[in-house]
Image (cartoon, rainbow, N blue to C red; front, side):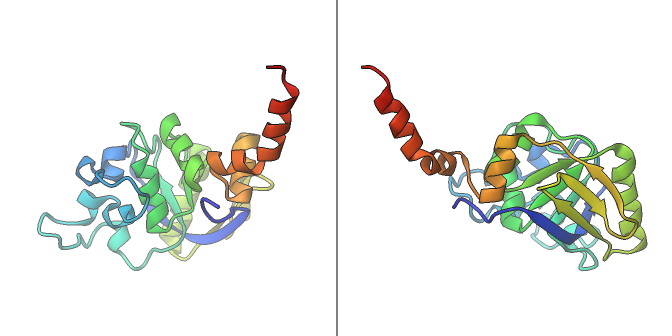
Length: 198
C-alpha cells in the first residue's frame, strides 16, 4: 500500500491560524531536490520554524511542545501558490494525517488526497470554534470520521460534514494511491481489454 488506511482519526491538533499559507512556506523551493517522499518533514515550514543559523524559533507552533497531534488546523486558503506536490509530502512525512481549513487551493487539496493526507474543508465559523477550543485547552481533540464524512470538536460535540469524491474516499479507506487502485482492479482491466475487438 502507498500509505496507511484512513478511516477514523481522533487527535489533539496543531493550530496555525494564518491565512493564505502558500506551498513555498510549507516547503521552501530549495528543499525540492529529492524525488522520494521521505525526509521532507524535517523542512516543513522551514523558514517559520528556524532561524538562519538553524536554531528553532521559540514562538512557532511546531516548536511549542504544548501542541501536538496528527491534525493540522490552518487558516483560510491553505496551500495556495505553486503546485508542488512536495508540500503534501512534507505534511505527511512530518506526521500529519489530516489538515483542516475553511478553504484549500485545489491542486494542494488533490496532492494531499493522492498521498494519504485528508484535507477537511469546514465553514469559517467551525474553523474559528476549533481555534477557540484549542486556545482554551491545547489538548482539545477533534475526531475526523471518513466513513460518515464528519469532523467533530469533541469538547462541545459540534460537528460538520465535509465533502470528498467517492473515488478518493475509497482510496483513503484502502490506503491506495492511483497506481495501487489500478493494480487492485488489474484483473477487471484485463477482462475488459480481452473483450474488446482488435
